[in-house]
Amino acid sequence: MIEVYSAIFEVLAEYKYCVMRNAAGLPYSNESNDIDLLVPKNQYHEIVLNVSRILNSLGYTRVERSSFFGIECFTYYSLDTSFDPVKLDYFFDFRGGGLCYLDYEAIITYRVANQDGIYVLEPSFEAWLTGLKVLLSGGSLKRKYLENLKGSSIKNFTCKFSFLGLIANDIENIQAGCEPKGKRLRYLSQILFHNILYIGLRTTINNLFSHLKYELSRLTSKNRFLVLSGIDGAGKSSLLDASLSNSQTDFKSPRHRFKENHHRPRIIPTISYLLSTSKKERSKLKEVYENPRSGLTKNVFLSSLSFFYYVFDYILLRLKHLNDFRTGKIVIYDRYYYDFLVDPARSAMRINPKLVILIYKLFVPKPTMTIYVTTPPEISVERKQELTADDAKKLQDRYIKYASLWSTYRVIENIDFDSSVRTFKNCIILAITEDIKEFID
Image (tube, rainbow, N blue to C red):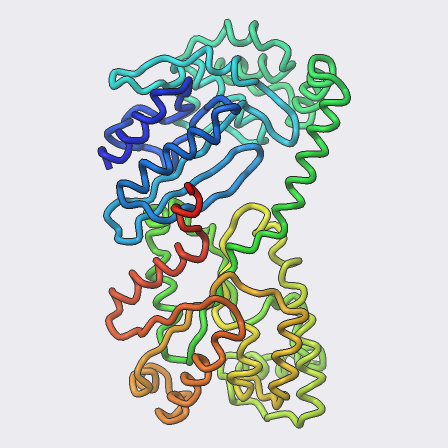
């Protein structure tokens, strides 16, 4: 990765930038999951374009873009696994919730060049700024950052940034081993007052409303919703687990960023559960749930009633995952609405196929991508005894037959497991990213 990081900083050398934290090993190694870069806002688009072009020339073909609290985030991927992903987070200042804490000029003043010519923050200021970030987010300093703060000279920062109010003094209190005197709400109220006083009431209100508008726009994210589909015994769960086991390296994301679900949102309980009256009945219902196709198939009328009841559950999917989409989580469903058409017997239903398709088109949230896992029927039967080989083949063929109805899709033939895992990882990357050439052109 030395070649990659060196190329990035060759581009950045043309601009007045700095790395805001954990820059000790750059450009030879990156101790952090990402690289936090402070850049001038008026040159941001030019910087991103030039960095993207140089990474594309090195073999990075996909890029994931997202924004979070005024930070513009880019994660670059190479599908041939020649390089690990590269995550760059761009800051223009230090802000949160629509409030400006420190502007670009206040921060860039403290940049210094390290031994390799990379511009970083002066260590004492980095330690002080880390303390500021943690207190404003309502957290507490980890041991590593606390030790850095205790070994830093920060008195001049307390004086220079006294306009921040009590929080500036509380960073000194923490350094001295004392408890902070304020809380997050008090810190923010003092900073709000400063914004009104020095930026102006009108600008401050506009910033707050812009932030609210931005947060609401995040709720409609459509590029981080995947469905995993296929017959029982195809190896879907094993593929998913193996593909996400090293997510920190493969996707620059902690494992908990991936929110796994089964079949439907389950905001509302099953009809049978609502009608059950005892623990014994509910225990039987659990057994039916864990052993699909073991329930008594309903007639057409009851199947239709059940179908519309569960459709309402799917309509509520975005409500369930409201905060997941807002915070950039990747939502993955193992099975989905499609089973009402492809495999209704699994839920003991008889439903008109045309009705299933119509309701999907009108009301059901559409995934970014569906990944179909196929396998020779005899192998699926060996893994799970729920279907005969003939039924498994027919059902698998139905999944692929109707695949184009639902969303963009990929098919993984799960014969060689390691190869399937690599393909599965690439499918996730394709779903959450865009072609870098479209971006740079």
